[in-house]
Image (tube, rainbow over all chains, first blue to last red; front, side):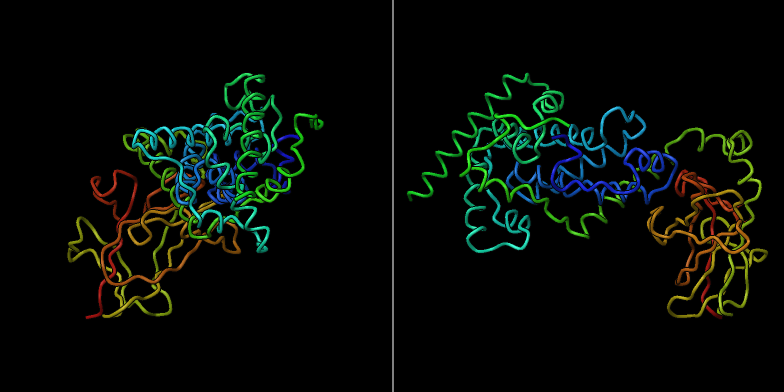
Length: 191
Length: 198
């Protein structure tokens, strides 16, 4: 599966590269269309990564604005979303680093979960809250690898290109994240 | 597209929990609009920060492929619906001199002001100014039937306004109106004065 096939990504008539070209030609509405198209998937990753909808909106905005400033450097050799995702991953890492420096920790924002819900059912919401809490407890490197693999559904090759980590290291992080999540889910269930 | 491999597959109980997380959240409309506005502001900042624009406006127009557009820029600010008794311009820092008639507005409240510009060959034209925080996406102009004239009408209260057009992503002042003082915005811009009725 590639980024273009990922859930939440809906191919539309005008290709991203064409919207980028039009934006560079001064058509502001084309960038608005890119934002409409990619903001949701970006928020999905950032919300899960940071555990807060508010922080997710902030870093996603930063990523989109950085992308906008750097549009002239987008060469179209990779999918626009891949390019945007690389910026977003870095912004999330910076946000976590900044947060760590403030001696804060990832705290799950219940409103983030509620905001991310799509027509929730009661039982499904409960499971969802549980997995959100469990993901928030993962080590950031494991959380990043797990989300990219199993929520964003990237290939390990794409993940390696985006994160700068080796494929074997990424597989190890994902495996450890899966083990930890299963333990946490079991604990929740037992409790 | 890569095929799914064994290490791409989650254990069933984990898959059941993680699956719903793949739904993308719906962004808030006001947040989306804010991001787009910020991006537009960045774009305007790039335009204004361009030394070529600041230092050599005339040369820019004469040397640029958009010369045809620039040469055709014939702008008019007209009162709409008979609201204004006098058409004219402002000069300097909001101090109209006797030879510079100003737009005459109703004494109280806002009145519609129509901005029109002839920009042959342009694809996108918008109006920016003090009245819309120089947001290039806030006031897109509409191309009229002749294919070259663009128009937008906005309500303005009496006052002095600095404005410009964004023609295909480039700022252009109104050549038929007084140029704003350079320290107004550091960009090519013009001034219009809307006066209250006497």
